[in-house]
Structures are given as C-alpha cells and as structure tokens.
Amino acid sequence: MSLALISLLIAFAAAGWLLFRIAGNREAGGERPMTVMKLVVWLALSAALLAAKLWPLAFMVLIAAGGVTAIEAWRARAGPSDVGDAPPSPPVRRMSEEEALSVLGLKHGVGPEDVRVAHRRLISQLHPDKGGTDYLAAKINEARDYLLQKIDG
Image (cartoon, rainbow, N blue to C red; front, top):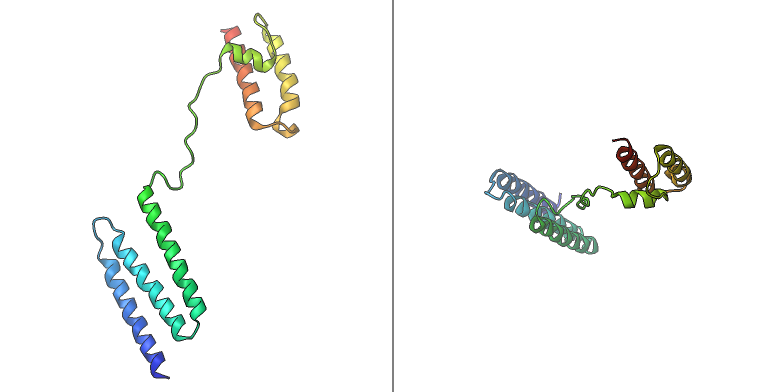
C-alpha cells in the first residue's frame, strides 16, 4: 500500500471517531453537532475524491453540500409548521338558500320531489365519473341536502 492511501485511511478513521464523539454531544438546540458532522463527512468525501484525482467529482460534491446545507438552514428558519404542511383549508361556510336554489336551477316554493328531480338531472351530467368535478358534485349534493332539510324540517 502506498503512503497516500494509508494516510487517507487514517484520516477517515479519525473523521469517523470525531463524528461519533460529536454525535454524542447534543446541545440545547440539537442541530449544531449534526451540522458539524455533515460538514466533516462532505469534506472527507471531497478530500478522498481529490486524492483519487477526481477533481470534477469532488467539485460537484462540494456544490451539493452547499445546496443541502442551504436547504436545511431554510427549513430550520421556516419552523416545523411551515415545512411539509398542506395549505390551510378554507373556512367551512354553510350554503345559503339562494345559493342552493341557484345551484339546482330552482325557484322559491319548490317541493321535495322537485329538488330530487333537479338533483338527479344535474348529478347525472356533472358527476366525476361522467366528466364533472368533485367540487361540482359536492355543491350539487350540498344544495340538495340543504333544501330537503329546509323543506322537511
């Protein structure tokens, strides 16, 4: 084995020992040791690639390390509620009588059978299985339910 390879193996062993020592020392925030550990790994990988005369690959590893570090820093600043959460759902608003009548194309004073016929006609055309959308089907169903509840009770 060449002296450079032995030196490289010793450097990796020392870096590994340092990583395990740092990983055991958690601070109050808990993130600092992990960041140092990642930095040591990235630098060791780059040094190994440079020693193997693969400088373009070493350069790409350093660029990737910078990108990953920047993303992690952004996520840390954004906080846990801003990362990975779905957008907030709109507030639930109850349909008005005017809106329900408008959706089903009816006028005031209709009976339950008129509501059911209008619902059946619209849902047969606008159901998601027939090319409609979930939103339209939900609105049609909500209008039917609202009007039937208002008429019956």
